[in-house]
Length: 263
Length: 90
Image (cartoon, rainbow over all chains, first blue to last red; front, side, top):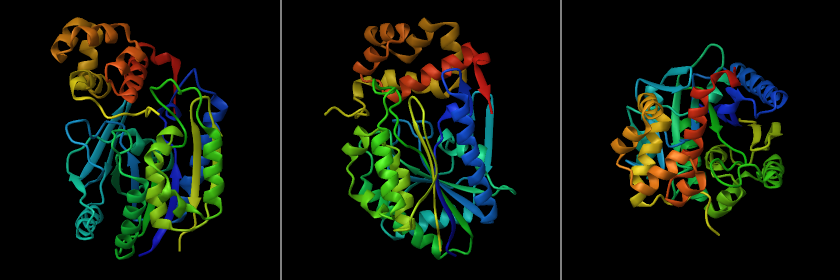
């Protein structure tokens, strides 16, 4: 079954719990864009959401650092302050992705016991379609160097698409991350919004394949280490022209939501 | 160019593990808030790491090999607990 939706969205926890440092109107505009994504996902009637997320050293600490991983448990759960989340995993789909991914020479890590990170549950908090569907958490290492190269992320996305096309489920593919931000560094208050806007312009033109030629150094410099999740998705959607649903630069983060037409 | 996010040095593992637990283990975070010294001893931190963490000096922590993101999120988590009323929930 071909993909039924492909979107990318942000996940900053300040969208869920807004500190007084954050512009409330901006946060509400990002929420409005999430509402559009939720309608898109609902209209697409997916059987499952494959959610490509960059773990924030939550599910995977320095005890084991996979480049690419798949959660194949019955459920995944995560906690953030007063919020508790638990989602069923679409086990047949998750297992097929691991088995066929390895068959196609992507040596994936899989786990049946992993704490879910907010990269996964913040988008689901705002954009889970109605009725809710099971998920498949797909992990890309973005914060613990050395991370996978953009080229490798793109190649994994292409293989992922081949796997999904051969499955009976209607799958919505969601990439969670970005855009420019530098948490914990002295550049936190000066994201590279120009880089983001140039990237969005490129994606609007259907030039997503060019992201495979970025380097890890460029991504780090631009505050876009998390773009690896988008690049993985781009491997799956190819040269489709992106529709930018929102770009809201806050004092520390380029909040972008983007959708791609899928056939 | 120095990367914003760098390979975590092995000798910073106790510090990074301590930060990871402060971020992700509510029980450990509560123990830290109640009795920082005991929690840092339990984490096996050396003198420099203890002093940097006690002062919550980001630059010193990162200079000791702490992962910048972990420092950032521990700070946010501690603020969420100390001043929950300053956050608006959605």
